[in-house]
Length: 128
Image (cartoon, rainbow, N blue to C red):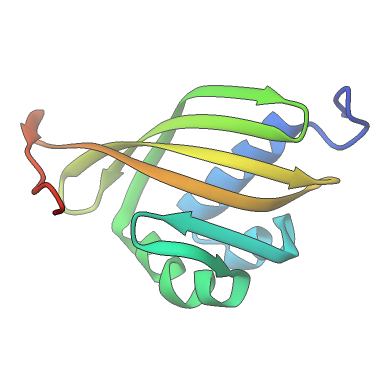
């Protein structure tokens, strides 16, 4: 399936990315990223693909479930809001901004949201 940009359907690619993360299929995720992939988060500033898999991928074992709640695609960019349930009972919601190159993911910027435990809000410390 293709979208208006001529590449593979971006929404389907993002869903496969989240499935690969949830099912711990690193090699599938690796194939979805461009060779010059970058990742940015409140803890990481434009790290490369190798550093992402070294630093961030091990956290996949902490995720029991992830559910895409909102997904908006426009051309070679997309926003995703999702909810995660961690193995320790914590639940959180994040937003990610994706950029694509052809039928692969070129970069991801993640923005952390609120955290919950047993349905109750858990306040985070304000950085400063």
